[in-house]
Image: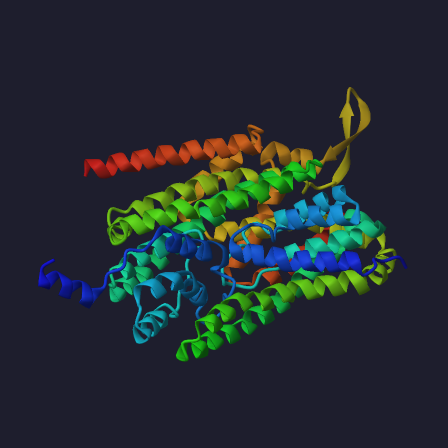
Length: 247
Length: 282
């Protein structure tokens, strides 16, 4: 039962904390691809980190709402999944751990978010006595529940869990591995569906169709599709501008 | 100096804010706006802390300062990139000691700007970057994660010019936002670009979903019985390519519209993957 010592889990836990705060800051560091790649570098399997991170990033498309519904936390999943997969079980083993981890993390996200209310009430109290330093402190401390709700689980899971979980994965039957592999291919559907749900599809479906045809029938590359999309949207903008000028 | 002017300056004591204070305020908003995000008043405390250096310069009397601070500890939530624009406009009014106008411009702008900011970010910019980055990473390229990393920094940098725009335009922003449908037009353009790209990304990203099903059929060629294997996927490709990815996305979309939570949909898809893989359909 080979696991990690104390030091690597500590670094990974710290990154889970930092990436979450960076995400609040507006930098996109709590991204499965970034965290997977970084974890891969730290545990010595960059290639695996890229694979797990990319798979989870595609699953997490459309999951960047602010303050809305709870979403699976694929960033934390990528860190723990890559660290465990690197012990020998590879992409399938890593994903088998990352997906349930991402789901479990939703509970801790709610806990973390609920706790931060303490700080705004603290700020109210400090303001009554005009303790400006106190107000500042309340704001800056507000990040702690956000960061710790990610950092602690990552640290504990990799420190204590990696070895035992790895031994468990070795017992996974082939049908289970197949199911995980297929899940990896199927789950981006959720991300796409979430993206579409933020758009008025009834109004905009012809453009969805144009994009589909560009790839499915014309085999255009992703960048090519993005450029066509840019051109189409600008043309529509000009046409609308003209019709409103005419009015 | 005429007497009246002396009186005026004593009464109002208008302060012209120095660049240092403005920058301090911008950087606080830029980097820490959401650090104390909470369910109750969301970004309120972050906004207060950002504008605090300005309030301290403008309101010298303690009761005035306290009143102003309380005003800015009210509910506030918008797209983080749009926030510096609102902050700039609010500061311009606080500088003139127009507290009421400052609070109302803040509330008036946060909704519409959240809408447009979230659309551009969530529907257009970020999906494109994420999908391209993930595709690069899948093929083993380290440029993938670097791309998202840099895109995030670029997205942050947009906040700086937006802040100065807000500060210089101030109340004129309101007419821009409410006025000639500019915001609607930008949101419309972003949505069209975003959904076109999504239409292409769905089959491209999910092209791995193919059925291994095949069946053998005996046909007679030139009087001889020949066994011919028919691959179901090839037949499908001839009718509608990428039919399976489209059906799975359609199922997930249908469930979202039925108000099923994303977490439950994830579980449904994993179950579907296990069942179809066990049955050998996918």
